[in-house]
Amino acid sequence: MIAFDRRHTDDLIEFAAAATSPYHAAAEAAAILSEAGFTALSERDAWDDSPGGRYVVRGGALIAWVVPDTATRTTGFRVFGAHTDSPTLKVKPTPDTGGSGWRQIAVEIYGGVPRDTWLDRDLGVSGRLVTRDGETHLARIDRPLLRVPRLAIHLDRQVNEGQVLDAQTHMTPLWGLGEPHEGELIAVVAEAAGVDADEVTGWDLMVHDVQRPAYLGRDGELLACPRLDNLVSVHAGARALAALTGRPLTHIPVLAAFDHEESGSESSTGAAGPFLETVLHRVLAVRGASVEDTARAFADSVVMSSDTGHSIHPNYPERHEPGDPPIAGGGPILKVNVNQRYATDGLGRAVFAAACERAGVPWQTYVNRNSLPCGTTIGPITAARLGILTVDVGIPILSMHSARELCAADDPARLAAVAAAFLSD
Image (tube, rainbow, N blue to C red):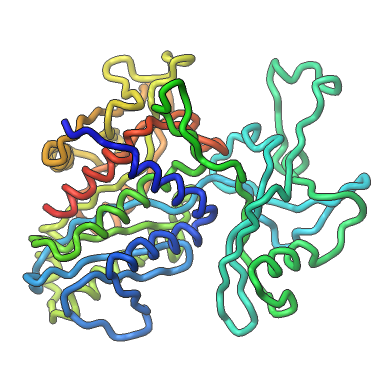
């Protein structure tokens, strides 16, 4: 088994700290690829078939690939899939609100948020602004700006017996005293982005916990980090793909980092949309691929969908499958569900096992307990959209979807090693 140092996790910490929104995650992944020699492409331009690394960013999503020297009209793909978004609180179209002498910011719950984990945290704001000329501008205020205060126990003596937080009335952050002023939040964010607030005509903003990721535990063997779900996979895929430039390849390696997974993937940048399919078709079309050529290439392709999974929880072992529960630190997990909440089948299992063997990485199996509903991810959606063999994998974590999640500090590097082995197959 390969011994991993912490340089990969150190790099993940910096990546996660900067990737406070899907738009920032796509930009940070693009920066990794650009540094490795990848070229940014516009979807509006004609593409050519010259060898090399390319990437396309569409909002909060990114697709990148390497064209090998030996690529033909029927060369298949090895796609490492992930998603850039995480559960959070998104700013509403009319943000400035308040009452009872407090200035507040109106937010909407995005994804499956354990609401209590966002209480009493120092929150920043990030995302993108759109100006009247149609240009987008990344914006991030990475200092304590907002806070969702919990009700004091003196005013709710039953809080430890079961707390109910109403999404509309209890989760509105505050950020000052006095009466709200229309346009105030956008003015503050625009100033931070270096944009004239009067030119801002659209925005997609969300909050984030400003506490940095950190090693945790007696020996620093754990990583406490916001947005592990699923920045750990985006980062692993970007680093793995960047390392492949100049190497001999039998297939076309691809990183597909989608947005909107946490809300169902049905968008122009989600796995249920045509983004990946369009890019793959174009990569083949510039070589003159026919419909039959493309079908042959897809038949020789595999998608490895990577998303976080559940480590067994020491305080709630009864919530897990007793047969083979995965544990943080035991290596990446193969995610299996017979009802196709995960896309893994026997062929996919063999693909994953082979990649782990080549990488020298131990692996585990995750199966949901029968008495609990199973979550899902981009794997089944991608498989249904493309008709390509797909396997669902990830790393086991605790506190999934919380404002701050937890994993073993060595598992991110193991996942990246498996991604590299898979993409270079």
